[in-house]
Image (tube, rainbow, N blue to C red; front, side):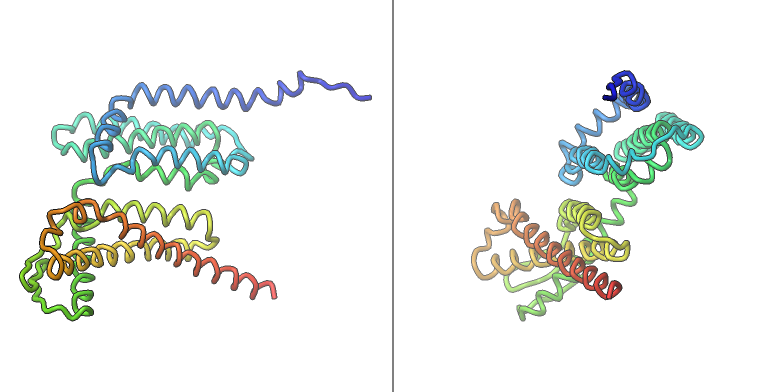
Length: 302
């Protein structure tokens, strides 16, 4: 009978352990270097109504890497020539952000700091585990982008686009109901009620959540990039329609039921039912796209 050689097992495990230890050291170095910035990011996310999702993003990314670990770590090898330049760029970005912090808003400063921290860890991952592993882990690593607060200009652009889209959706929904109304830009005049689709009505918070959900659903349940992109695009339109539907519903309730609707909890906390409706609609779209993919697969095999 052939004898078991435990020393060989240890020999086989040692490269993986060494690689793991190296990444732990890189992670500790990043925690020391960017710890203050990450603490600021945590406090910012905890206090923000728009960026509350930031705290869950690293958990999602780590979970994705864990669930796909077999494919990600099937072919590993040190890629210092690729990973170290990314680390160097991240350190340069960190220094530039520190040097010009006085010229940046607090939001933009946090944006630069978070970007440099994520680039540091990504470069370290590629340097230690290799380009092939980086490619396999591309989606989990790209998910970390949602930890970065939007720069002020980009944030204003996104909010304006959602505000404008929500206004158009509101207008057409009002027309479908047949309620008498006049429109002036973002403002609407109804019988006994004047409303404005303000920036706070853009729905950017729920929109970002729905967008992230569409990316995850596409990653797990769809095969083609075309359908994944289509799902995320539809998620944006669902967000806009959901905002318009909420505005119209609250307005009609205020006009025909009780004017105090706009000062009550239904206005302040009533977004959950509409988000649930949006999520259900997105799930229906996902089901249609999956069914279409299966049908196309059957046709190709026939």
